[in-house]
Amino acid sequence: MTAVREPVEPSHGPRMETVHPWRTDAEDRAVFGGVAALALVSALLFLGLYPAMDSPDERVPARLRADLTALAVAAEEVSLLRELEGVEPSLDRLVAQGVAPFAVTSGTARTPVQWLAFEQCFMGQLQTTEATYLMRLEWPAAGGAPPYRVSWRQSRELITRARGCDTDGETWHYLGSDGAIGGSDHAH
Image (cartoon, rainbow, N blue to C red; front, side, top):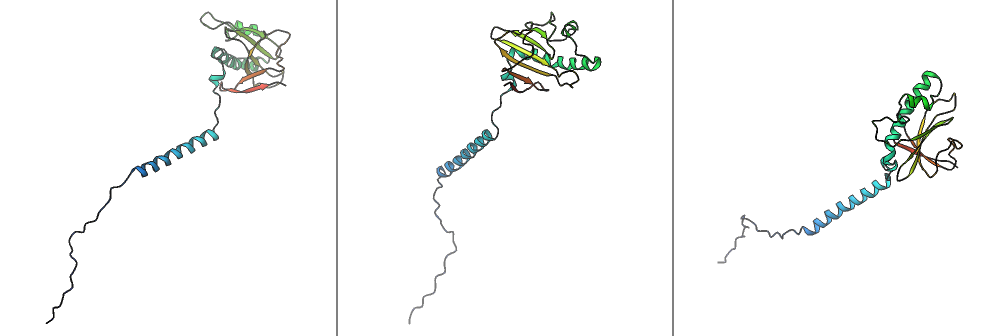
């Protein structure tokens, strides 16, 4: 008799699979490189789309800030007086009323500013140990509607009656309504 072999059925026991350890160094480098590239592109786009702007605090000399702020407030007072009385108030009247920065009170530690009145402006000169600065409060001609303009510049010359508000060839920096630098006026 011949022997018959019966088919062997596979066993249903647990199978063993070999899993090799994962090498994370390649994946870590890829993730870090991707994040670094994204940060670099973001920084370049930010700098390209939003260029650096000068801060008003950096452009206005520290010594002038208080006087320019007082001059901007005085512009509002002068505007109200002009509206009520129909004429531009005189420098002597503003000093008599104690309007800063025209009048120096005993309680202030500021260096006195020499003020001159002209037809279209009040101009003040401030001499510090570092430089000489000019400040100006301008208004429109008679019948013109304000706005008053407050401006400043560094100067090598003293103000004189002969020059008045004439600013040919000089650069003035204007203050905006919020006290920020609004730009420069380059006379040509």
